[in-house]
View 1 (cartoon, rainbow, N blue to C red):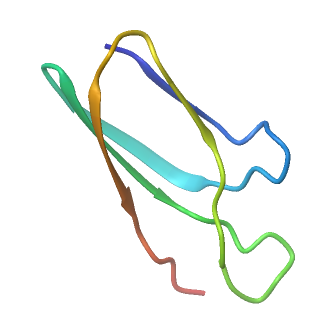
View 2 (view 1 turned 180 degrees about the vertical axis):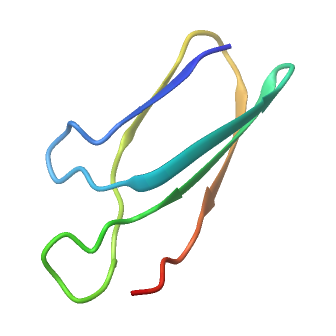
View 3 (view 1 turned 135 degrees about the vertical axis):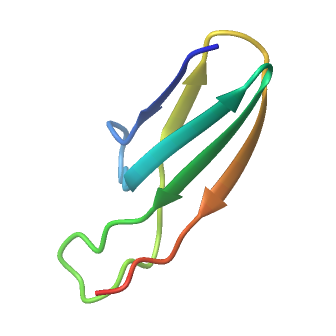
Length: 64
């Protein structure tokens, strides 16, 4: 299984991405980048998999 994360989309915002895979399950950990603001308030990204997979998504708050 291969998972690709991309913020190359309109308003894309994601950072600190890590992916754990176990057989046909994957967990994606990510945070949003503050960009030019004082806080990381939103995220937006594209996730592409090579086959049908159950994916758990976990967003972590970053401290500034």
